[in-house]
Length: 201
Image 1 (cartoon, rainbow, N blue to C red):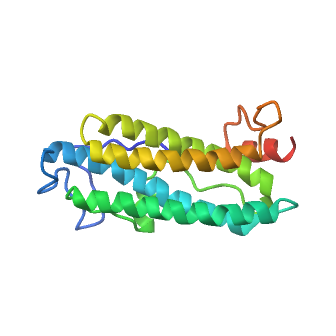
Image 2: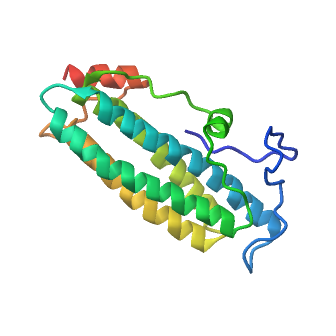
């Protein structure tokens, strides 16, 4: 899930869409810097909304002997990710932007494909989810690094979310890790590959 760079003339089907520079932003931040932070947060909002839907999809589609443990682990994570998305959306609004959370906007603006695993063993799903979380954490870290010099308030927001996201990934990886600390999905490039490697370890 890569960070989307803002373009000079961003086209959209949404007539009320925020222009490149907002009319106003928070005190002490230029509208140019505000626009950059809004663009970074818009990408994070899409990623978090997508993650909450993916977590629910996995929650509904896990099977096998680890079903109940994984099924029940994912609900609190889903709620937490929804709260993260809400916090990001509210920060966009505070910065003078418009947080677009509609499905059409998410699909149009994301640069990743839908989660690709359907009904599957719980451990297989966790293998694929580990790959998803890696992408989100890496992009959250890049966004945090960029806003650090622009807006410490947004940086603090992303840092708080990173702590939670990395903890979620720790929970996931605990199911994929050997007693010697090796991940069964190490080296996997796709969700399907990660799922298969996790399920056959």
